[in-house]
Amino acid sequence: MSGKSAAPRASSWRTRFSLPNRGRSCCRAIPTRTRSSAARSEAGGRSVGGWIEVCAADAIDEEDLIRWDRDGRSFAIYNTERGYFATDGYCTHERQHLGEGLVIGTVIECPLHQGRFDIATGKALSAPVCEDLAAYPVKVEGGTVFIRL
Image (cartoon, rainbow, N blue to C red):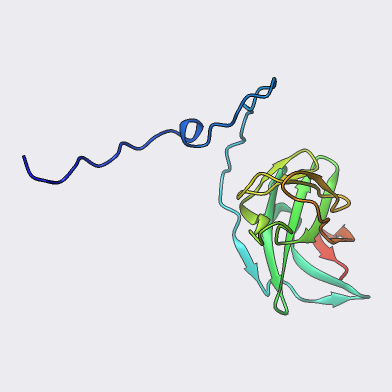
């Protein structure tokens, strides 16, 4: 046998990221994405009365989001059962982009440390985040999502 040790076995997500129970279950159903959240760099851009075109409304699945970049800034555009919303794209804790986060109702969970924000208001809801996100007005008109910055 050579002097090399065997490579460690790949472990499941639940094993690698187990948390202390603290009297509550940490298990939850995670929706399966049919496609990844694609960046929409400088997509859209047409401005109508102060509203900027983002994308077609059907480009964002319900309970999902896309990353949208414009003029050196990054945003997260969400489609939920309550409608469409927009916030700054980066978590206020450690600047992880929320585009790969998990949408749960009207809450976005950061993919890095699982801090949560209310996507309608940008309000920080759970540790480790304590600073709110900026939220922006959104409207859907003629099958197109618009944001006002």
